[in-house]
Image 1: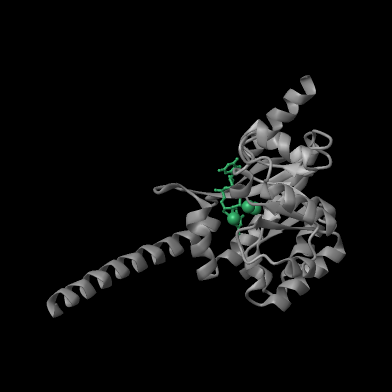
Image 2: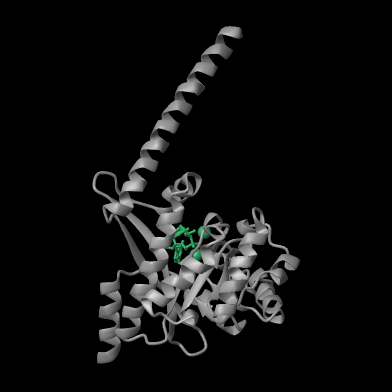
Length: 279
Ligand code: C2E
Ligand code: CA
Ligand code: CA
Ligand code: CA
């Protein structure tokens, strides 16, 4: 038994060491990614269900590594957060998203809002709001054409610093949305304390909307409850026409998902704008 235990220990140790080496390599590569221009943004359209027009786009980061290929943000954002590299990467994302939105507005979507995902780590920094305002001035993007997507994880750590940054930015005119609603520690009292104008219902709830579940859907209740608090609703992960029809009937303002469009490169948005012009 002792022998087995010892072997087991050793095995575990080796695995851990390998995981650590892998992680520090990834961390190292991630630091270089920014300098080597390996990071790019895609943009996923958000549909305004009332007007049928595009409200704007969510910026989604991709890492194209010369050897490892394209790496999903789900795999590298956690490493970036733990190592702190998320701070310079996050700043790059905000600046690039603002610049690209200016050009998206010029090619045919003059009202386009750009939504940017923000990590809790970024929001805790005392100079975050100042940095964002600086980028808005630099890029000449109107504050109400930028939306920050935050998650409930900001409620866990450094709540005060994060709220201070968000209130400063909200007062400046920047839009704030709560992402992944329903997956975290959401409580309604928290919702009231956050300076948010919109809430994104997580795709796991949206994808639960099927023929059989329509009648007593949780999403319908969330929409009406959130509206009573004066907050707008964006549904994410919309994949079927039926989901879209239900959401529209329930008064959900905006929808995003593969049914409407996958995330696009700026060139594809240009083509889309040209096609709409021709039609
Ligand atoms: P998220 O913010 O919840 O983004 C939505 C994710 O759902 C995106 O995955 C998007 O491509 C995917 N998606 C869109 N429509 C559909 C659909 O109809 N069905 C399904 N199943 N999925 C859909 P992606 O691009 O892989 O991003 C994953 C996560 O990585 C994001 O989740 C976000 O948490 C994080 N992320 C992405 N870009 C950034 C960034 O610039 N900064 C930070 N901090 N996080 C980012
Ligand atoms: Ca998001
Ligand atoms: Ca989300
Ligand atoms: Ca997420």
